[in-house]
Amino acid sequence: MPIVLTQYEKVFNKCKNILENSKDKNMKNKERRLIAAFDQLCKLQEPTQEFYSLVHEITLYDFLLKHNINPVAGNDMYGGPDFSSEIGYIECVSATMGENGTPERKLIDWRLTQDSNRYLSALSRLTSVIQSKRKKYADYIDKRVIDKSTPLIIAVSSAMFTKEFCGDMIFELAMKILYGIGSQTILFDRAKHSF
Image (cartoon, rainbow, N blue to C red; front, side, top):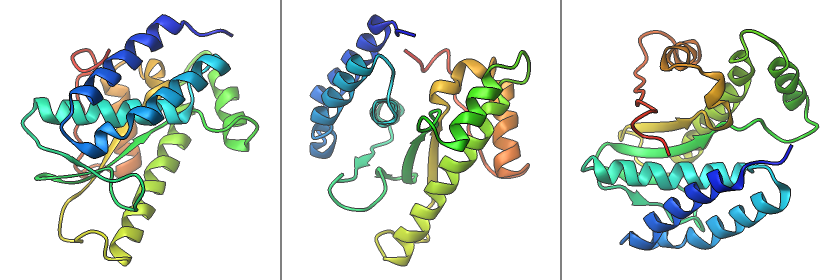
């Protein structure tokens, strides 16, 4: 099913503008990757993990700056968190549907054909992307890339599953299921912080 490119063009242009106005060299270096990811999206007529991931990183960077938090982007050529800031290290993750043909993707596709509880399709993806970032942080600590006493933040974007979470209440419930009641999670109003 063809996608509506104008919607993605708007997102692409907003992200490109953020990068062009950035003073952070490592953020400016993402522009080539963003252009390539958008070209791939246009060619395939479907958003890719790379496009969603870059959009999430770029818009989070902009969000932090607008809230007087000064993130320093990590160099994509070296291992380390996406950002370091006065609030801690930040790893961005965007939960897409996964690669075509994988068992996980088949389960997600099946769940999305259901009439109710479609949001359950996202739980396995959210779980796997959060687990992946947890392992990444453990690796950074083992290799002494980061200071283990600094807070570790995982910034999760529900990406393709946003429409399955018909309200923030469902996403908040999903985070409680994944992190446990009592763990600190922060949700942002998508209506105010979306494109």
